[in-house]
Image (tube, rainbow, N blue to C red):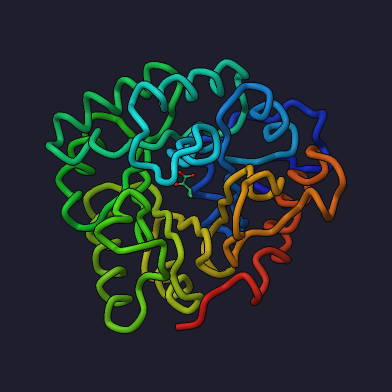
Length: 279
Ligand code: KIV
């Protein structure tokens, strides 16, 4: 039994709206959640028809749409524009918008003002990159009815501080990551997204939290999986990250590629051991 979408096989059936409480129930029952990045109305229709549960207007748009070499130049106006484009498709999927670099770091009040701007154009949840230092901000947003996903592990907005796009959370840093995630959960985070961490840490983190975890390069044990849409369609230039799977080559059409991602996450085929990182 599935508790959420009808899935890729019922692509033509109108789905019931995906809600945050529904996602939490589904994850608690062991159903694997699916998230893809999405930046426009046409792809929102395709992803929605395939049964993707969460559409992320990621600040990865700076790299895959705008051609920058990091997410840092992305503005709140950019994310708001693409969020509005996705929301106009009226997807059943939950719409999550990234808060770009510089839009939430100053104060909880700054974060609320900018999160509200994204919600006004259709976001139902926002995602912020950072650890325990964000706990007050998460609590401030939560108290004002802004659902929050905390993004830990590799946080691309910190690429210059980190010194590159590297695996995070090895050794003692893994314990620290779990502790920070627990602090954010206690502050009110509704979901935790983890990027580029060892597979065993993804499993420990998911067991340590009550809220759903969504992984990208975090192994198969998180509550759900996210990938960048352009990566699964193999239209991103350059070297592919280890966790990326080219579903277009496998399936032959965009619609079938997205449906295969949903199917393989749900049945546990993706991610395989070859997509993960050792401790
Ligand atoms: O911006 C984005 O696309 C993201 C994903 C990599 C999770 O944050």
